[in-house]
Amino acid sequence: MAPGPAPCTVRSPVVLQVGDVKTDLARPGVAIIDVVLPPAQPLDLQEIVFKNSYTAFLTVRVQRRRPCDVGREGARKWVTCLWNHCLMPSPHTETGSQDYFSLFRHQMLCDVDQVTAVRLILRQPSPVWLNFTLEELRLYPKDQQSLQTDFPTWLSHLAPQQQPENLHGGIPDPEKVSTEVQQLWVLTEMIHANQTAARIGRFDVDGCYDINLLSYT
Amino acid sequence: MATCEKRRSAPAPATGSGLVEPVRAGVGGREPESEAEFLLQAGVTSMVREALLKVLEARPEEPVSFLASYFEKLVLSGAAGDRHGQQQRLARALWYVRLAHHSHRTAFNNNVSMAYECLSARGRRKKPGVNGKIYSELLKKICQDGEVPEEVVSSLLRKIQCRDHEAVPFDVFRYGVLSCFVLLEFVAKADTLYDVLDDGSGVADKRVCQAVLGTLEDALGASDFSVPIRYLEAGSKLGPDCLALAMDKALLERKICSSMNREEFLTKATALFIAKVKPID
Image (cartoon, rainbow over all chains, first blue to last red; front, top):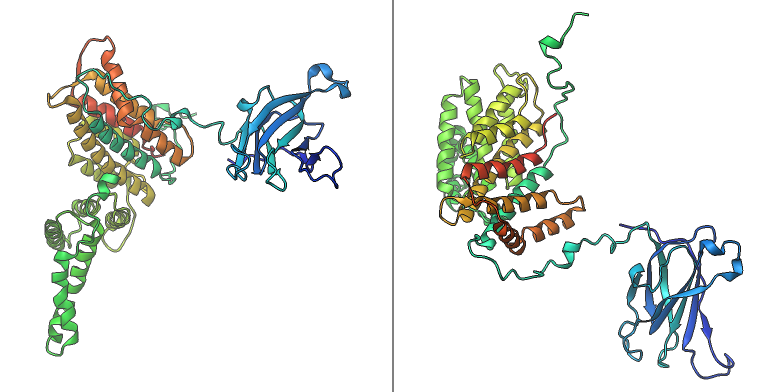
């Protein structure tokens, strides 16, 4: 379960600021991180993983390769696939400021196949933080399944999902039945786990040495 | 295995310590030196030590009766020691493998290897190994002492038996013996389960039985995920809630209400177990 992240280039954040960067005292509230994917291999995006560093809201836009605009390099459009996703519930306080986040395909507003570039727009409205960015940014492609994708359904309701109330009379005590059946299961699993690799070394098919099958030719 | 661990977790040398004390006390003094010497000469020291080791390995629920049968066996095998007939060796091997419960892994493995050696020894210091005939006979004997239906035993044996002339490697031997013991326990548990299912009436509803066995089969055939997840999955499937739902659903089906007798239930349950036993090849 260690899918490799897709190869990509993460550019350093560009801060958007009104006025002169050096003289203006106001802190910037928006930064942009561009991620460029190798043009030869567009990415079917499955998951974006990163560690937050004091970013309050995140917007993700992607550029996709469409069959229709092959040849028109300049015409590619940016589409927004995640809009003001909240990373810090209250921007002035620490909560969520250094958490790890995973954004999944199903959270996206549009489909994210054949992605050629990703642009992350970071917003931090609170002036109390000196700077804000995202760290350890990784993109995971679709075919390499991450842990979340093969998450079995039964695991999400290990706790009794629906209390069987309206059981009809006449069934045996489920607690007792369960205890016994689980013991049967344990015994069977045990014999399964104890299997030996040793072999007798039989190589004949059953019955092939039957006297009637032997011939003198 | 949780059930087996319930047996006796604390060491049980209570009865043993009284026995071993005089031996130790004798070593130091001048006068009692002859006592210690006597014990050594008569082989009592090593014999008692061996017995204590067996008690510690097996941790029986009733140490006294365990020791009693141990010494009784010792006497019998001593008397028959000269002849070393095949039946004697078989009985001795059988006794070894029954000494410890299979959940005491080390003790059980030790005893199985003792049994293996015992079976492979033959007169005139030859060690020809264990052949399929005596191995199969041992397995049959092991299976005899539970109340296991005949056809169940034979369907297990068909999988793990060797042919008479084949030489049996130790691993195969161990696995075969273990399978038999686990089968015995499985049948006993399935029997208890039937008692729960029939609610004291003596006959259980066929639909309920089938629902329970179906759930068990489902949990056993669970996907090939990594091991811890499989255990969780089986746990969730075999929980009281899931079982209650399955049984309830089965009862609601509009089928003719028939019953399943104990034999049939045991056969069907053990079929699930035997399917997981690896056949010898």
